[in-house]
Length: 144
Image 1 (cartoon, rainbow, N blue to C red):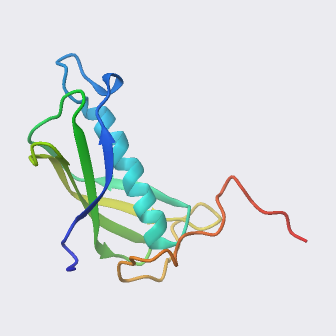
Image 2 (tube, one colour):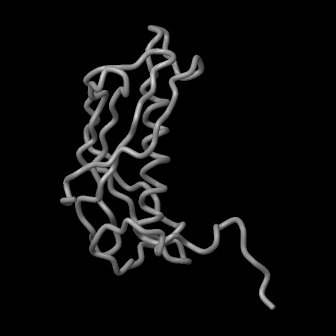
C-alpha cells in the first residue's frame, strides 16, 4: 500500500439527530466524526494519547447523505514531521459510492507531559497495534 492510499475502516449510520434542516447529513456532525477518527488514527500512529488537532485545510463537500445511509471514513498519513502527523481524509456514501467530502490536510501535534509539542520519533505508518498507548490519560494503573 502506498502512502497516498486510503483504507476505509470506520462506518457511521446517518440517524435523525445527524440531519440538517434540509434532511441531509449536517456538516457539523460529519466534521465531528472526522476529527474523532483522525484523533484515534493519530494516537495509534504516534503511540501517544496526547495528540491534538492543529490544522484542517479546506473542506470540500461534494455530495451528501440522507437518513439511513451508511457513510465510511478513510484516513491515511501523508507526512510525519518531528512533532506532527499530517493526514488526508475522505468520506463516501457506502450505498452510492459517491465521495461526500475530502480534506487534503489534517495536522495533529504530539504533546509531551507538559502539554507542549514533543518529538514522536516515527516516520512511517503502522498497521499493527504496537504503538497503541498502554494507558489512557484519565485511567492510570496504581504503582506498586
